[in-house]
Length: 122
Image (tube, rainbow, N blue to C red; front, side, top):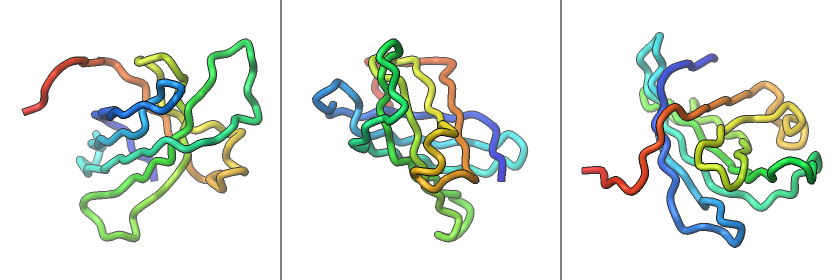
């Protein structure tokens, strides 16, 4: 299954002790099929074994993807990483994490194009 399209993701406070968001929610609209997938992520306490002190550290999230048009059997879960202290950071899976988290058949790559802050949704 490959989903490509537009996503809307909102990060929610509170923050952890390292200023990471504790959770996020959003959705993706597949540009080919027009199916809508829900996203829900929760920060997990994980020490990156590949951490490089010359690079910014990463926060890790357990993300659940749900196909709104299908039954519960279409729910997938994976661990993604996000560069800390960067509001414009991408959310991605890393091949180095695939074995540890048993997700070698899954990948996720989200790069923001627009950021809106201090706005209320009505």
